[in-house]
Image 1 (cartoon, rainbow, N blue to C red):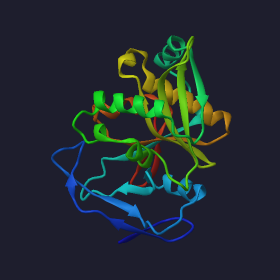
Image 2: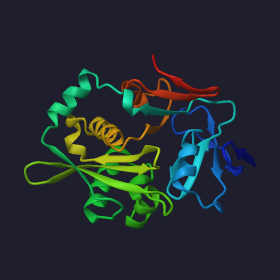
Image 3: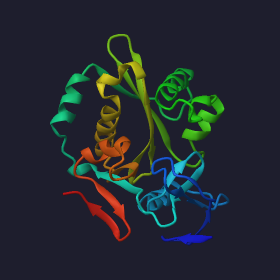
Image 4: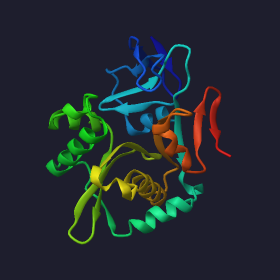
Length: 240
């Protein structure tokens, strides 16, 4: 058992070892915030700055033995400037509307989620989720979470959903799922760009994008949003 830094002392409980899903030759381990704690959005904002993430009701961070490859990544939204490919993505998706439906379960969202995880993560366990597990995975009773839809005009076809936490100081991208057959649109990139715009509109300081591993192909897209910062052992390090 360890403790997290911050304005109050928080007990952490470590998990056992399991194979790392990204670096297959290494074990992984996690520290979880004491589940008896009643978190607040303000406390979660502090913990995000220390490299924690939320999975359902639980707050965790990586604590892998002898490995610090997983680093939290965040974007200072006031200083972000879209690159050429970002501007092209926005232009190519000018027919998409952003609709915030708040904290609400919708069967249409779950159906899209099911299609997405079946296509992108077959056999990984996520594709076996039912509506209850889906809701438990994406939401927490203590955290202001919003479901942000991306719908195509005309007709309002649902193409993507960006699940986003708002701590009051930052937005945190929880999970984005989109129509697998519309992959050529770059909907994952578009969702991040629109979340950056939303964070800027709300005058939030950061958009947190979760963990990043240098050289991991599935995570390389995160470093394409500049400037950004990643959390190294000695603190947050800005990109060039």
